[in-house]
Length: 293
Image (tube, helix red, strand yellow):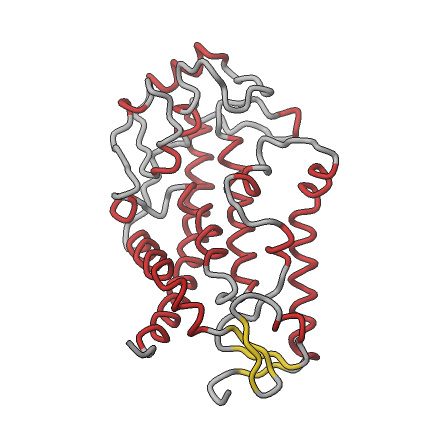
């Protein structure tokens, strides 16, 4: 226990309550809609494409290297252990089971962080997903420019999508128009920090490292994903003005400039979070190296 930071209840409980209140505020609208069976084309993505449930995001973890006194509820959670009256993440058990995940996340994020941000995609991945489409993903919402106008925008631009999990949803007609052909196998080599989807995915990598990360970091990644998703759909071909999302018309010079301005700010936020996630991975991998063979 000597190498752990030990927190008394008067220290850790306020942190836990603050985190829970933050998550409640961020997820309230989604939870209320879910209870009423109402879909939402923007925010549902954060809870359908990403598998982490609001109740799990709300659960507070101090992260590796921290022990909590008077925390019996934590001792019942996976990857926790109780030692000398305190509860902490069992790092040895975590890295023994999740070491391959930690190594992949570290490899992907450090490679992405080491590249310059490419800011010339203009969010055309969403347009490529409905290019000459027979079935529209968000069929309840109209295309701002109609199908013909949407097709024309794609045909007038160069599509430069580097993110496999966006590219795999391109229509068959759109796929050959992309300058890259990203695959799962080339993900580490392809991803770059200007990509909106790479920024959103920081949330996925953070929750996959739970409970070894402090929950405040996971929530920071969720908040970035939520903000990025808003731009992603405002710049999409859909007309979501009825929901209060004014379009960023990337088919115009003004829309392109606004998209790039926000994209650059998100890239900066993402790089700061990547650095924190890589540091956490390095600490976990140090523990893994110390395990007996």
